[in-house]
Length: 403
Image 1 (cartoon, rainbow, N blue to C red):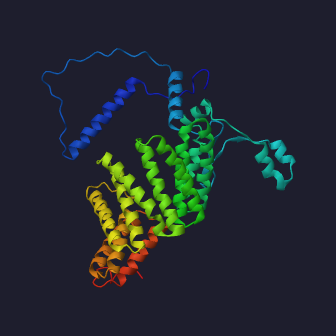
Image 2: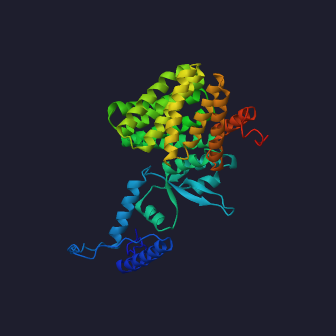
Image 3: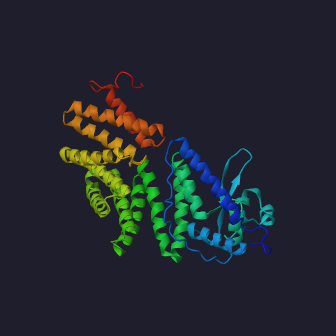
């Protein structure tokens, strides 16, 4: 930080803050009046005695700056020996790269074909200091804690470049693994990265790679869960990894081999949901576990058991949706539940029931597609559902479905 404090973080004086808040209060009152919403009035009679608060000692600008920097460090944990610096080209392209000091003398002396290797050997990472964070908070440059920048890049690439997303998650995982040697709390971040990689591998049917990543993620979360079996977060992570292990086994060895994992995941989900019945996320995850178990049951030929489990999933999904609690990310799985339920009814010879399931599934898939929240496998499911509806007797979609 600067010695004279001239570049310290800006803070609004109390007088200006009071004026701004009064103006905002007046604006909100006008907005309530426009929409005919009554403005609550404070009781005028017998007001409670006011307490005179003791003025807190003034905090100088340098101390406030230190507090802000400490808050930033507590919220964004990552490597201290390097940070990511944002770059942007004239054509609008942008991204993050490690902040480094290059040895240009060594680079320029080397042969052109060796310069990249020389650069990698001679460059020195710039550490994440308080001065760097202060410049970020003042808007002088945009930085990212390195592991978080890699994770964000993975999220951005997941739909357009899944292999690049895996590479970013893998690099973030290595960073977190280094941090975990000093702080065990980062072991969960390693598990999260493995989980994201596993999810992509499942979507793109990567076979043995899927199983490898699923096993690593499960080993981490299971160890953490066994160390603290009553910890809800540990139980939650373990349930996710058991489910993904089931998906990986199903891909490699078939759905029957995956049934023990699906059942175990369902049992854990039931325990979590029973512990907090009002937890919307826990109930959606329970519906997902019921769908996964039902899907593999019907794939094994256990049609009646699969039908029953899929009906439970559909009922819970429908209940959450009716209350406005179904997250957009869960809607495609509701549609997929209805699609597979239609397949089961068709296999049982109930063409009318199958048609109704397909119609509802197509409707939900289309809503999710309009929000651009369908990945490639779900887009394929939408296409399959529409194909089934084209030959479904009496379907109202039959005459106008796109060819």
